[in-house]
Image: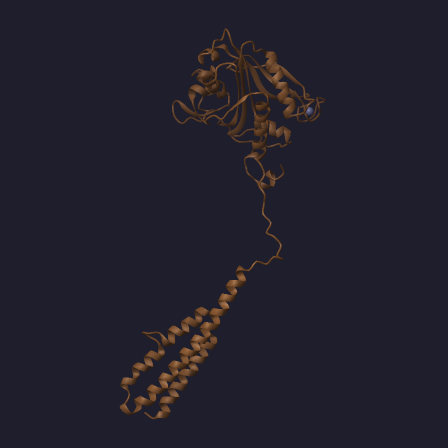
Length: 345
Ligand SMILES: [Zn+2]
């Protein structure tokens, strides 16, 4: 082989390498070119060096020199290119970390307190100011606290599994917060002033006015000489604070197993102030809660002397108050967690 042929071949490889390197546009592609040309195992230059042994002895020095020069050239060019791309990558990295103090801030959404939760806290606050103790009670409850001790024996229709979520024979999801009466009498000696708010559960299909989960507030006051007058006075303070200072109320006879006598309590319509409108069905009154004097049987079952002590109790749906207070016409809106609804409060 003549020197001329050898040098042509080396020159061709150099042109090939230059073309490939010119195409490399990043640190990664540049590194790939390096592996292809000067890789230790399969690099093109390495391959050429191996060919040296196959050449006639007299051709070896010229070929070896040319190949060495090519390798030096390739390595030099590659190092320069890698250095260039590396520097650019570092600059980009620094630029990315730089803080642009002129850039406008990122807007972020602020949460709002859920309207039911806010009303729940507001209700508790009224009772705290009246000297009541707040009870935080279990939602998973024993049948005894939810029914038996509240004068609702096993045959009582409310205990039907159609209405109540049962876990087993004796454990259920509480159907009301009236359990506060039993829990309070268990841990407090009269005078008792107890209030509890929270979620209750009933097997009601959801519609505009029903939900299988809703919120209640229940109250118990127990002492010597407590009368219906105390019940009325407390309710009046509470309803005026929650609805409107001018709100009026009226009692109608009502039946609840754990009170005697029992009453349904109405407030004067907060929309038409008693004149009659669509909300109050032209009656001027809105039914708002159930109340009464604690049944002597309930007192006796909790070991309270029903000759010496009397008490009043009442319970109310918090969601129902929220519907009226915030003029919402579908209870499901409170539990669907649609931000378009919730951010209005
Ligand atoms: Zn009205």
